[in-house]
Length: 208
Image 1 (cartoon, rainbow, N blue to C red):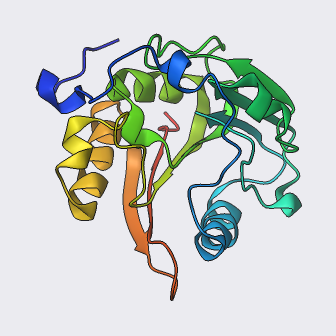
Image 2: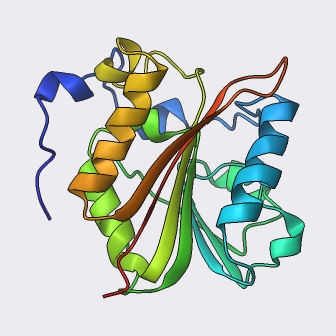
Image 3: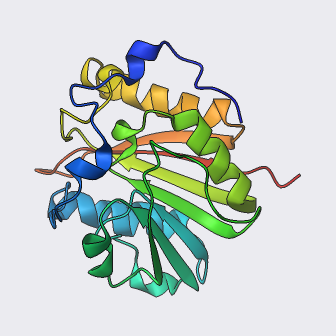
C-alpha cells in the first residue's frame, strides 16, 4: 500500500482530534437537499450501480439513497456511528470503523460488485490508501462511485478541500482514483434547478 503522494498540509484539519469523538453522537441529518438526493439516487446510482449487487457503503450513515429497484444482495456499511447505521434500512450489515485511523478494509479480495462514498470524501486524510483498498475488494469490473456537494463540516474537512473550488475538488478526487489504479475514471457535475450542486466521480477496477 503506497503512501499518500501529496504535501502533508493538504490533509491537515482545524480539528485534528480523534474522529470517533466528533461522531460519537448520532447526527441523523442529510447533507444534500431533496432534489440533489433524487438526482443521486435516480440519475447516478440507478444508472451506474448493477442490480442485485454486493455493495460497500463507505463512511455510511442513516441513509444510503440507493434505488429500491436495484435489489442489492448485500449492502455493508462502514461508518463511525453505530446508532446512525442501525437506523439505515438499506444496510444488511454495519461495521464501525474509522477509515482515517485505518484505511485497511477487512474483506477478501474481489468481494464487492460496487462501492459508494457519499458526501464524505472531503474528510479523508489517507485517501489514496483507502482507494487502493476499495479497488482490492472490488470484483474485476466493479465500480466505485464518489459523490459530494459544496457542504461540509469545516472543522473536519481537509485543508486542500476548504481552500479550493468545485472544479479542483473533482480534479483531486479523480487523481485519487488514478493514483489508486482505477480505470474509466469520469467526473460529472449536476445542478438541479434550485438545488444543491452534486458532483460525482467514478472509476472501475480493471477486468484484467
